[in-house]
Length: 398
Image 1 (cartoon, one colour):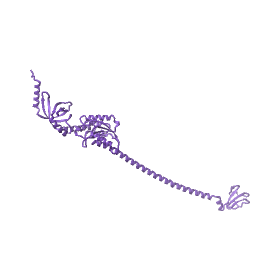
Image 2 (image 1 turned 120 degrees about the vertical axis):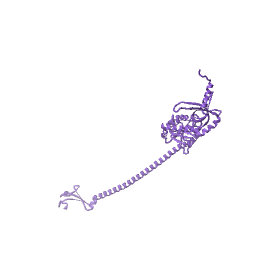
Image 3 (image 1 turned 45 degrees about the vertical axis):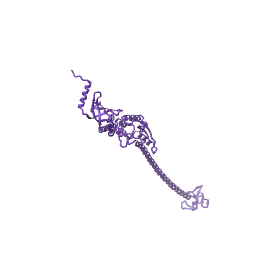
Image 4 (image 1 turned 180 degrees about the vertical axis):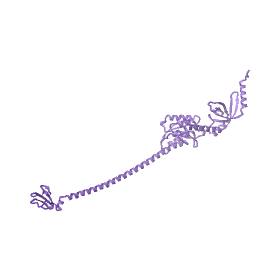
């Protein structure tokens, strides 16, 4: 007959087997599946692991960090890794293995190596960047044309954030008096839920795309762990594929996240984003002023040229008129001289006479015997009848 043992005996054998097979202390790698802070200061963990290349949890165990240890480990890890101990992190833990006949296998965390998690976070970040590059997302939003005057601005931020208030004050109180229209789309800007919250705000803006020129994502400075959400893959994809240019002003001068990489324009702080818009308007104003000056100068030059041309035409017309008048005077003078030269009185004064026969000017053939001749001389008129013609040649006399 097969051996029969009680449940307790079975548990005791398992306990002895575990304690004999596993050192008292061991370093393990695992992912934090769940993390709960107890009111008494303890921290309870669900640690999970996967098989390489396979989906689904391959191993799972309960873990606990007692309050006396947690008080030291949590701030140490937060400071060293730059992120809080939280769900989803891959960690390297020193654990004490124990088995309870009532609670089963349990791992008591004694120490943690933050450098392992930092490496995992950076590895995850680099993998996200590589994936975005392969999908062609890195330059997608930056290829959009920024409006010449981006006046209508959709803002994704927390309404209580100092960075948002700084942006609004700096933008609307600019020294040049440029006017902008801003609308806030409130979102959670840190923590595990931040990516989904920001994506929801972006989707709302996209549904009203025609009402805005650009979208901006603003988050003031803070600890590095508060900004890890801006390395999220899904958030990056949404920014890259957004229909409007997206500008980011996240954190401090030294902060640079994947969200910044895929955005149209990355600026160091929310205030820098406000300065960017003011500078764009200032540049456009300077361009228009320069264009106005060029147009004014061109018009002035054209007016000057046309004035000179008109002056030349006027002078030419003046000279032409004077020449025409002079020519006319000469023509009139010559006509006068010709008229005077043809004046009968002047001809008669030179010793000539006008001879008429029958009321008509006579030629030599008209002077015949018996002809009644009228002769006009300088000092009078003589009428006579031809008695005898002595000759008929031009040189003969009557």
